[in-house]
Length: 413
Image (tube, rainbow, N blue to C red; front, top):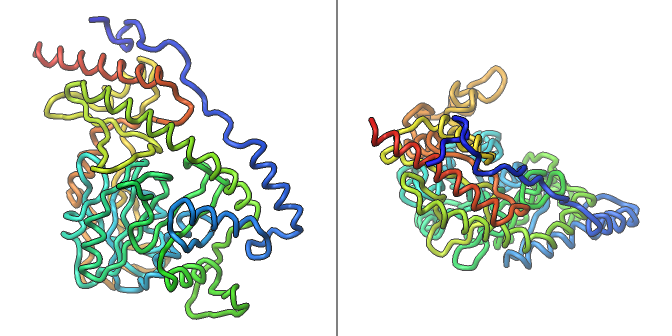
């Protein structure tokens, strides 16, 4: 067996890792020129935002779309539309971004975290059920890393308990379950157009819903409660300014044209990676639920500590030395990572909203054991559409080489 590159042996991969290719081009320039020629960049006076919403509705099969400035804004608007307010609880995933819970806390509600499935790394109906109380107003199901959460039983659970379901699809453009887009199962779906996602307009977000009342409320929530259709300032509730511009919409419109190719390529590369990793003892591929179609924003490679007794950071360094740009872990569970949750204090001079809770949530180690175990034992692989089949095969070969060395050392102890 060749020595590890970390110990002076030959590297699995000597070629440079591929760089990110051009994301924007003539299609975006054409849309921007048309937007500027309108002589207005206000989203209600131009055509680009209307065209963006219409195309998003066709893609998702969901009739009503609200454009806004980010996915954080989209989720906040969805939370307001669903009637979440002070004293309510919202159940969501602990492995997520600040944007998932920002709107919850801003509305005076308490984020409650459900544990994740140990293979797909998303919440499940069973884990959500354990966290439901009479104060639960909504569930935010996060489709993490381009892998769809199995929201089908979560939909049934929420309907049974009269709880709204919001889908956070920021990382999962084009991911599907049984052929249907994520974001189309619950009451509201939210998508991100920031600079790091599958497609981008720099920053932007979209809300989709089948419910006309929720659509109207989400629109008001994203635009200072101004009713742009009827030309009135509704002021039914306090709402921020989360408006998108025609320039953002123009770029997003062009990017939607690129989306089918991007997600198909990412899906195919992920399938190839999973197939290779399954043949390595002690290494667990990122799981996908039955009927799921993943579009991989990134990919988590998990080590099984029962089969590979190894320090994960050391394993990561060894794979890196073989020429593969993996990193250790992803984000820590937010209840451990965010000081304001630990302190139960999100705003200046106040413990609101946590101080108003009858029982403060236990934001401490052990709250979601699966999430803590997964993050402690995984490597993050930067899967994207510019990789080749050979890049994936090199990754599998490097992980296999390191895993076999670890297994050999374990047998010798």
